[in-house]
Amino acid sequence: MRALVKPHRGPGLELRDVPEPMTGRSEVKIRVMRTGLCGTDLHIESWDDFAATHVTPGQIIGHEFYGEIVEVGSSVPEGEGIDELHVGQRVSVEGHVVCRRCSNCRRGRHHMCLRTSSVGVDRDGAFADYVVVPARNVWVQPETIDPDLGALFDPFGNAVHTAFQYPLATEDVLISGAGPIGIFAAAIAQYVGARHVVLTDINDRRLELASGIGATTVNVARDNLADVLEPLDIREGFDVGLEVSGSPAAMAQMIELCNFGANIAMLGLPSAPYPIDWNTVITRMLTLQGVYGRMMFDTWFRATNLLTSSSVLREHVRSLITHRLPAERWEEAFDIARMGNSGKIIMDWTQ
Image (cartoon, rainbow, N blue to C red; front, side, top):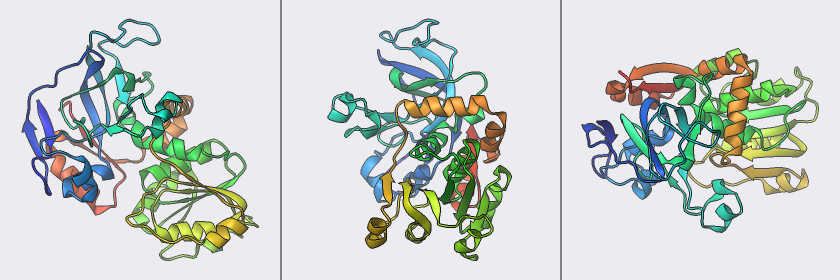
């Protein structure tokens, strides 16, 4: 089968012909149909410190995907019931494989597992014709979710997990970072009834991608974010902040413009540690909440229910797909992603 492999320690990837994976007793084999390209994949291709810590040469990468079950392990309940898996089902997959033994797993907090192994990062992934994953990580999708949308459930789930940290209805929400996750979060905030949603970035192209969802967009490299408060009748500051950029400047601005008692959820990973104005955090009684991945599987229920309940939200999410390429053109896909002006890039493995 075809597979995009990390050939050695250092920059680069190779599309190789490799043996089809074997299905273990508690696993399922999935024929991959679509994959999404993620910033993590760019880190692995360029071989930065993160990649060097996690990825083994010869490993298949890729973790955002949708496909069809083609084989079910011998110990996996198989049938037509709500809890059974069977050949032919169309699925997305939760990419964090947890130990189920640590204290967090035993308390049901699987997204906080101390020994998480990530598909496409710590173990073979889905940039391939077939992938094998634990059956418990499979998420069966309804017919409403087509292959393109199904391949976006990993980043869309990140946005859902971040957005639902705090109630958003009737609130004024500031979101920093107009990458796909930031725009997904803005669309969610609009859908659930936020009063105003303001989305910031320094990239005009990415802000243009958000123009159809109804949020107020601000290029903070050129315009003063504080100037939008009065026209929107935001008198005391934002009620909720969603920080998905990892930018120290964005975080400082969010703290400065949030109201007393505001809640801030932080998903964006900074490239290095940075200082925070703790005097303002303390005296304004702000709440800062770190967010990582998705809740297993509360976030998946929310994500599916959101997209199946609203055709408008489905189209907003779908509008973030700016490029669709066959898997054989993976190098072109990576080049486009690296330029930083695209939305989501989908690779088609059925061609």
